[in-house]
Image 1 (cartoon, rainbow, N blue to C red):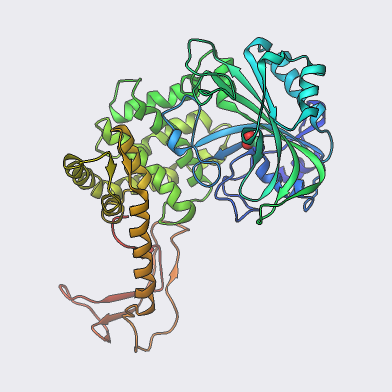
Image 2: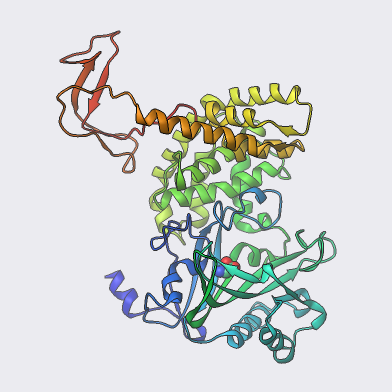
Length: 491
Ligand code: GLY
């Protein structure tokens, strides 16, 4: 019924835009993309002309994760006022309908007319080649040419290595001379004074795997505005972590970790990470050793390490889900509905990592004492990964706090060596049930849950199938199905 209502009575927003709900963080239409990293992902095929919708103008508030692939902000979290692993992107889209002129006019009208931001606090950029957009901004909108620059790579946007793309025009908010940093295009534009609040992408091309650009069937528009960044502007604060939502999460993080110092960077990292981890789990991702699941595991383990750093050695991360649901559960009922499940998955991961975290940190501390350079050797990074379950970016996070770097080339070489070994071991792998008359296979149910009721299909002792295994005896238990994924210990 709800589906029916949504289909036939779309919410119409100003200027004829149809409100489209956020899609999942796991892109349903795109195996090339790790996570939904912007509002346009659910419309990718519409831009390419391969999908048709009953509207030509849309707007959305899209949940996004940027923690892997082309757009990866994981390393910046906690170090800047504006980067997150999870954020919400507001956007308006035109599918072969309006183009540059309207997109620019709408954006300016919304920022200065609706949000009432003073034009002298805004700075506009366009692609170095885009005379048309430059003329619209300066001659038609009347933007001050001294608050305007033309950039190259920074003003060309694409969602991934392939797919729809085009030149863009970005609008920055100047947080004032009290904050370090220079305007876009200046040497210190990476600092926090001028913060990009809105990106207008003039979708014109599709990038092929060969790198070649081919024209889209119709020029289109994709825009993206970070909700947390514009909320900071509207709430009169500089850092995203000062907005109401993050203040609530930071209070909960302080409570759960016992750390009362709100200036502590680790609290911000944890408050950021609980959002990406909870939403990823709500969208069906589970911690694992590869693909999306490994990105999730890396984020969870970083959060746990930061908790440990501020003195919390017991599981705490799962406790933050309740505070998150309080903040965002109304907007995302799917998050609220899965609170118990998310807490359980996080607690399990916390308990598992707790077994190796202390030992790994002690091993690293020992190695750092005898370090004669500013580089942590690849074999140390590898041992921490392989034996103690430290993803390399977690070790890098610790290294960065001490002004050190990692020998990533050495680490990668050892990883490659290990992959080769397991490939050749795979060719001669031990089959404990070889030669036995066993029918069927054990099916894997780990994606459906973390426990499972099943039956034993066979018991094997040595090379023989047996009826029972007595206490103290070693053997193999073959199950009909199992939630356990075979893996090397520790990782
Ligand atoms: N798709 C526009 C952006 O992510 O900035």
